[in-house]
Image 1 (tube, rainbow, N blue to C red):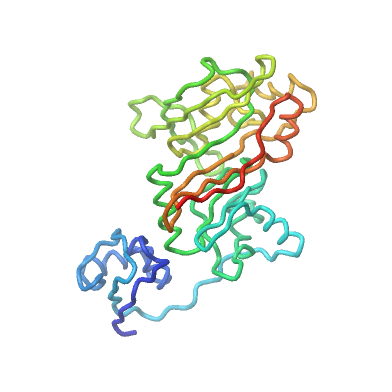
Image 2: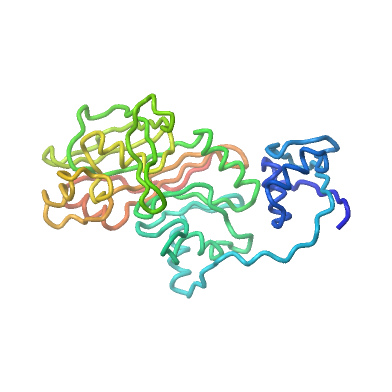
Length: 330
């Protein structure tokens, strides 16, 4: 293969050079890309560029000779029957040329892992709607329901991922917890650290001087309570650590209902024992997201509660407003 020049398309704007390179030439390793940049074999608009350089629409990328390589193995994808396809499409809350927003049901993993063969990432081909396969830009835990954003183009994926990294996305979660926090609203500023390995990993509170710890901040507000024993919380994470909300609620003395992984031994099943008939599923729901739209302005999307949380709300007398229609401001 000889030297060639490729122009960055509009939907590739804001992608890192190394990621742009891997999309076009998936057989080339990250190490090879960095060497190309270091030796000046890859150039952007005739100038040397680092692997982390963000590209702009219309820029010309010089690509050095690359040996031919076998086609990569196709990405794992589930074959969806008509019923599964209809269920997938029913998750869609909002869609335009740049992004798709879903209401993910509880129990559906976002990505695969040991022993997981059915997951959302494998189903995304069913949400192409005549365009390319959408891409994940953030995650929700398997048992957490609610708003999940997908990007429809590489450029949108880069911009949305950057928005999540920079905390430009406003996230609102609802949870039902065992206990009533005191004070009833406030901020949890508690660093967290991941311990253990592989499938046994856990997130735990850490000392502020722990070099392995990451700062984690959550604002919370009590929206209602039932006999001072159970409460409905609004949670606004200002950082995005793994299992942050679950661990922060335990630190408040109010573990999320159904959270057998993190509740303290004397708190396990506390909520279910108080009111007969409450579901033992995790009561954590990504209620809303407000985020910068890749094409400008913002978009706000709310997701309805999953069935088990609706039933718990009805049992406890909590009254939640219906999810509002998606709103985009330009």
